[in-house]
Length: 326
Image 1: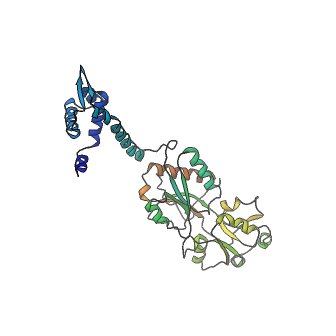
Image 2: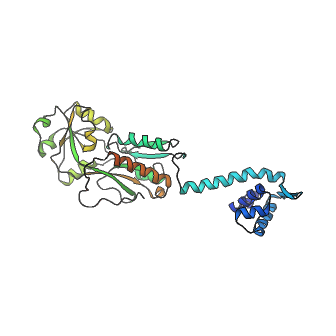
Image 3: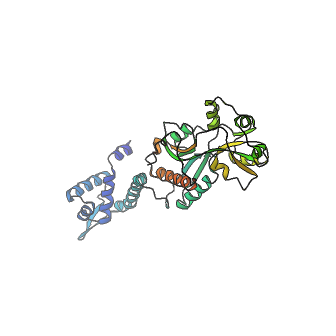
């Protein structure tokens, strides 16, 4: 109880006076250094002496010297002041080259397969001492809760209707196409809507129970259902599965074209008209003002821009959603 009452009598300004008086060994020089009037410094020193039960600074000849107790207080006082400076400067600034902040993000692997490797490379280059944690957007992932609790800083993925209770930054849009084996019959003779719907499709495992995903959500609005005969939670493995079968993958062109030339696959237009797949980064209000969070979001935005296709990228149906990255 005595400690609590003592603690309540001490503020950061008093610690600053203590450290300055003890290092300057002069009330007048301490006042000048702190931009205070000398009587105010003397009054603060009186309070410090009462709290310590020690004179702290005593006369020695024409000058003053710290007492033994005063000498012991110099370094702890400096530590407190340094910690306070770090505490608030970190909230107002972020220096990636020297920071030790942990970045945590959840990302859909439906994106360009070069996206995450390039992002990690860029983060490690600019912020070499910052650990990076990447989480999948799995069927068990409650990303809203993870963002709210601080488990994840940013979620990156595609949503036909992104949630309106989170901050949102648009990354890019992509044309919906199909990826098939070069040996697929449709690669030779083409297809119409009926043939496409009846083909054997492979789709990602839903991110959560009951979710249909972008492709099947849009088909449902048209009263259509495709023939899904395979599902896989590892999106990056699907192109290789397509290459060795008659399965059809329907997703963004930018993703599909990364595998043309490395696998026996080809990109085909989809006979059903889809809106563009829109990719976003989402974050919670709790990290909106964070300087580290802002820096991370700028890196994500920059990598997405570097991978974006060179042709114009209009948004179907009007203006893009508001980007609240700033």
